[in-house]
Structures are given as structure tokens and as C-alpha cells.
Image (cartoon, rainbow, N blue to C red):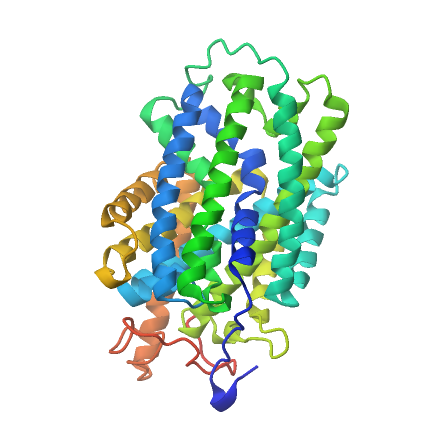
Length: 456
């Protein structure tokens, strides 16, 4: 689809602050809340709450940087755009590629977590694929439908979690002997706390999703900062309370051994027969809500990268009726379905964290370059965010670290080859290149969308 004179049509501004907060909360209250505390406890041991505090602190730094950048650059693409504008096209690409690979893995994790709670044995992958296809269809019909469905899901999940937390609080706690050390085979020490924080970051990483939808927000300079911090303010206390009741109910060793900690905790109560059903409902609804917002967010970043020529330009197509990047969203859904078929839930959490921490490291670096007129928070928060993101990215489990570095390198090599080929054809100086005029200006909506040449 093309706009007038062959330029890309803008997305419609339809999201209010309330919509934006709901999408942010829905992005975070997903698979991480129901799965991440187990492997995090295995790494951090009795310092699980310390690991949660580290993850929350780094997430807060990232949230403030993302909020003030989104207010200055209210367009789709999030840190991919901020990196290009503040640091140059290569840094923008690092952020965008990190987001796309990390959040595509997150989409698969959400779909697999949903299927684990609702699918009969042997049908998990089929149900996971069906969830991805269904929610992509919802997103295809427009962003306000995404926000409305997310609101319904989030309301149900929060209500169910309140019931679960109250029930666990009324149940006597477990014997926590030995909980002050890492379980057998755990990491322990400072390294364990950092690895636990990196794993828990997977559960936090959706708070700035609204920044990737900046082109669809009403009054973005006012709405985006409020929505990012509003979603963050809802979720951090929820995670803290959940961690406390899990440690109290199970003890750290049992928590570390559980693949479904809230269900395991529900089994310890006198009301386990019905409470496990409530947990299953909450987990299934939360993962669907997060998956719904994730598909939208990854689609918008893919749209922004395609507009600049860093991904095939046909992915920048915007539907004339529904005003959504439909080609990008369908393409993301195809990749996610492949991952659902080929991977497992726990294997993608560390990989997702690595990619998203890379993305936020660039966001904090970009925020450090903003002038006083656009600064809403102290520069020290952005500096701490850079250091924290790098430290946590390299603290993820070794297999995830190797895979993350390898896929990031593949993207960088692909862009280098494509850029050189484009420059040899005389394509310097335009959008998507590293010649004069690349970075430091707004090029959104300026690329043809006729399915012609693209970076990849």
C-alpha cells in the first residue's frame, strides 16, 4: 500500500493514556511472572529478592530514558529510531535488531507458556501456533482493538492474582531451611544475583512497549512518559509481592526446582483443588495479553527498520483501512510460529533477555546525548542504565549469551554487506544508508513501499 506521491502513510493516532498504560501492563504481566522466578531462584538462591531489586532498578533507568526519548521522537520504532537520531544508523540498527530478535523469542515464549497451561498433552505446539495466528488477526484489525482486548485480559489476570496471593498469604509458610544459599548446581554470589536479575528482566521488559507505538499515541509528549511510568508503577509492586509469597510458600530450593512456581505454591494451600484452576486461568490470560502486545510492538519496530531500508521495504506497508503495518505483523507471526514448533519455553528466556538488554543499552546511551530542553530525568539514571544493561546482558546463561552474540553478529554482517552493495550502486546519502544525511534527522514516511530493493 502506498500513500500519496509514493510515500508511506502515517499510522493513526488513536491510543489514549489509559490505552497505553494497559498495553504496557499487559506486556509485562505475562510468561515472566509465571515462569521466571524458578530459574532466577536457581541462580540467585536466597538473594532472589535482591536480584529482583537489581532488575527493577535497571528497568526503572530504562523506563525513564525510553519515556523522555519517546516524548522527543513520537514515532513507531522505539529505540531503533532514537539510536539513529542520537547516535547514528549503526547504533540504531543494533537496537532495532536486538529488539526484533529478543522480542520475537519472547513471542514464542508467551505462546508456549499459554499452551503449557491450556493444551492437552501432545497438543502444546499446535495450540501455541493457533494462539499466535489468532492474536495476529486481532492486531491486523487495528490498534484500538488491541488495547481493548488487552484491557479485558489484564483486568481478569489482576483479579485472579489477587485471589491467589491472598490464599497463599493465609497459608502457613514452608520450611525455608537452606534458603540463604543457592540451590545445588546454582550460581550463587554476585554472579548469581546478576544472572537472576538478567532472567527476571525478561519479566520486566514490556514496560516501554508503548514507546514502539509512539506514532499511534494521542499527544505523545504528554501521554508516553505518563504511560511508561504508570505501567511500571503497577507491575513492580505486583512482582515484589509475588516473589515474597513464593519464597514464603515454597522456600527457595523448591521454588528453584519448579517450572510453574505459582501452580506449585497453589498446591500447598487447603484450597488447591480450585486455586490451581485460578492460577491456570491467570497464566493463560496473562500470556495471551503479553503476546498480543508483543506482536504489535515487534511489528512496529520492523516497520520502522523497513522504512529506513534496514529490513525489506515491503515490510513498511501500512494497511489503508486498518492503519496497521500488516505485512510486518504477518511476517513476525510466521517467524514466531516457526519458533513455537522448534524451541522450548525455558530455552528462549535468556536469549530474549540478551536481545532486549542490548536494545535498552542503546536507549540509555541515546538519552545521555539529549539536551536540557528534552531531559526529564537526571543523566545519572541513563548512565546507570547503560552499565546495568551491559552487565546483565553478559550475565545471562552461557548458552543464551553465545546464541545472542552470534545472531546479533549475523545481523551486523548482513547490514554491512547490504550497505556496501547499495553504496556501490550509488545509493549514498539516502534513508537507510550510512552516507550524508543518515541519522540526525527524521526520515519516517519518506521511503517508497513498492517492494523494491531492500537491505536484506
